[in-house]
Length: 132
Image (tube, rainbow, N blue to C red; front, side):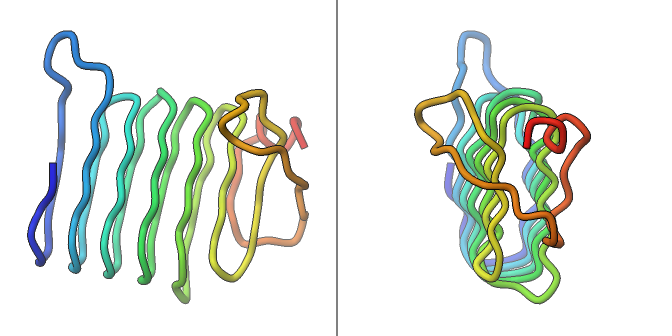
């Protein structure tokens, strides 16, 4: 699914039998709510993206972004922004931001292992903190 430029509100539900969703939005202030094992890429703007309990891959271009992975082994990237927030949720996650990096060691070979710098503005759950 791809949307045109503008402010978008996207709430999605998977069709029976579907297990993957790919969403891309263009420039604008977008709000995305994802239902399952998903890949989302939003354009420039102040975006709010909420993942699901499954594994999420979420990228957001420049802007002040609020990204919540919720659950699963997530890869979240907030890119550039003055006040980005990436909440990893439960699972072995990798959270990236253009100005800072946060990652927890994961078990999924798709996502590289990394270090856990303690002084970052990226929020994480107790499960992620314990895994570091």
